[in-house]
Length: 115
Length: 113
Image (cartoon, rainbow over all chains, first blue to last red; front, side):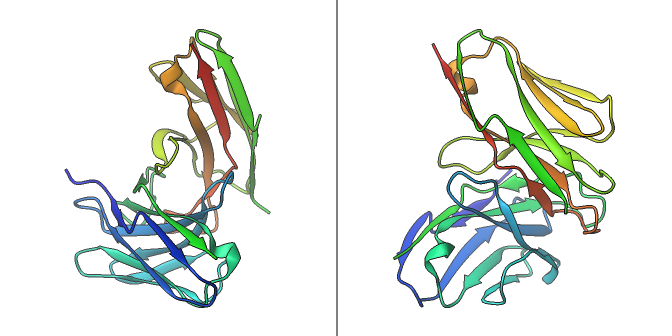
């Protein structure tokens, strides 16, 4: 069974640039959620994708966008990067849409630093 | 506003010294409370789900309990390998589709030999 994999693991960008982060979900999982985790904080929900459609969004501006592909892999795109976007970006996969058990399978994250 | 607050922020224990971590929550209609473990530089790893007050779950040296307003993660005779950040989360009661969890800020546990 293949776990959740994310790429890149680390990256450095400058303010105003754009970034794309990638996630391959665990085998058999059709739902992907993205979270932002600032240093010393708990993860914050960005959005979720189910069967290629955005299926709920947290309090993040529109410059945070995403995609899910037919193989259930996903991308997170962030435009016009700001210093506060520096964080660990976590992808989590799960099976099912309704009555999720809360058991999310997380990748190891992409550490983004914005200078 | 739905909130999850964990205490203490950091906890240092000697090997074998039992203790408890606290998670207080304010949510309109609990649909599930979850505990995760996060090692440095890694993503969170699922530990337990609790659904109703009085429920308990155990795994090795860890036991999670739930009341109507808080949850405790009890660690019995901890070992250095239990050192990690422990995260508590609740499922967003409004968000019907699952997958959206509201996390606390975590408790960083350090167990010294």
